[in-house]
Length: 275
Image (cartoon, rainbow, N blue to C red; front, side):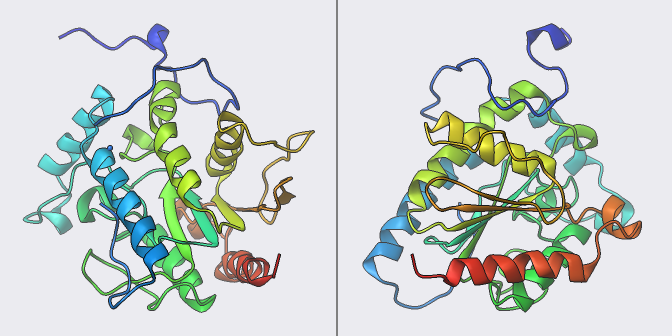
């Protein structure tokens, strides 16, 4: 088997804000649980579009390195997860189909979302994120360990720059480019979006790059990421920055629960403003 070559675009991602054009991807793209009960027609239409997108995401096999890694992870899990059936496929976003707040993370965790089949579900980062969402009024419960555990989001949707767990949490430039159309399609569907919360610099740059790809203006000079950063787009959408709730950040105290909570409290207050 030939080794993949870095010269073919597989160098580790360096967070550029523009890339050469890729061929349009029309095929190969489930949305997580949402609150039960009757929904307005707009919710049903939005949910249907996201479900169709989710099916294409789940079926994607464009990145051989990621396909191999997600399968290898599932075939050799750590002792605490042995006997569990891993999802081991790309992950769609999930949440309210008509969100006012969008959360953009990096990628599924190898033994988190790649195992449970839902972003941030079943890992330490999710423990922090869902508690913050719950305390800000976006989630109906503060924890989530598996799909079907009753979690529902109200007014918020969670997505990621990359839909598969990458080796060592380091996606390549080409892998990021291949995933961008999925985010662009989500953004087109979210017509009531007011706030984007970027978890980490990759999430921050991913959103700005997506705006540029969609032909939407971005501020000049480009806003720089840091925890608590705020950037207002020309169309009124506010981009908020937060350190990612990774163990590297939470164990060292770089990110605390009050810090993360404050970002989502601000997102809630901004989303409630009448425009």
